[in-house]
Amino acid sequence: MRRIASHLLLDRGRVVRRPVVTVDDDGRILSVGQWERLDGDAATEFYAGALCAGFVNAHCHLELSYLRGAIARGSGFAGFARAIGAVRGNFSMPERLRAVAAADARMWYEGVQAVADIVNGDTSFAAKAGSAICYRSFAEVFGLNASTSAVRPLLRYPDTTLTPHSTYSVQDDVFREIAAEAPDSPLSIHFMESEDEAALFRGEGALASWYGRMGWSCDFLGYGSPARRVAESVPAGRRVMLIHNCCVGEQEYDIVSDRFAERVSWVLCPQSNGYISGLRPPVSLLRRHGARICVGTDSLASNDNLSMVEELKLLGDVPLEEAVAWATINGAQALGLDDRIGSVEEGKRPGVVLLENLEIGGSGVRLTAESRSRRLV
Image (tube, rainbow, N blue to C red; front, top):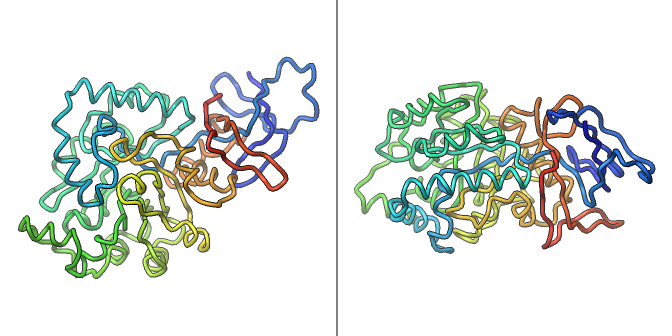
């Protein structure tokens, strides 16, 4: 049993001062209280900073960890997609496996408790089977000529379901086939990462030009927009995680929210967006609507790290306790894991993470350039 104290606890959007958290040897929360004095209390560990639950990385491609630094910054949306295909073959399987193991270990050290992980092959599953992190894997169908048959073998792995890559890269019958399966599990769909996605449905933009040059046709343009396609193709009772959302406006938000209400989660990956295109997610719009915002890192192909704290630093002038809720309980709710993780509550095993090098003052608590996270439990 351990008693862990700090200056603050950030939990479910609240700030608790002088917290003391008691956990058993299995990491289960036994109690959450507040300390008055710690002088002479040798049984209590004290850490300067703020405690929070383990993070939920709501969007990652662990298997692409070997591509760190392999794709130039600022290549743009279409350029990045082409570059992935060009460099994939330059790395051996041992290099790929080492990169996956190192990324998993680093995420655990920095306090990640669960990951919504996109998979296109089985490279990452051995590392995930031996990891302390809880992985929810999404076998992604990607390609205008793709069917589900290529990735169905991945469903033999635990906690793995199908998902379509996006609204612009999967034909209609395949998209609907995936959306109709495993109704109790969420879908994870790349959504409105660039203006070209909406432009495609008008026959315009870089995606439309690329598809035209390749001689590819799309049978889904009749929906009129990415938002309409999601709303009209996915059963209303299905949970949906929409990823990136850089170009989501009021109209797109209304269409999706009217269809799915509280079952939709908006996952933001600001470091990846900055790496690829320089676009920023619509944080103010989503906050104004009270949306469930979650946080992901995307992959090391489009990021320098898989640090959730570094993602939070780019979310703008958001109270830290609110941003931490996005990165913990909101992600747990999106994955249906909030009965076990996501908040520091009695009976849960959420992990306990320390946020260090914070600015703590009368106006609240803020991250600084030097802020970091590390796992305590």
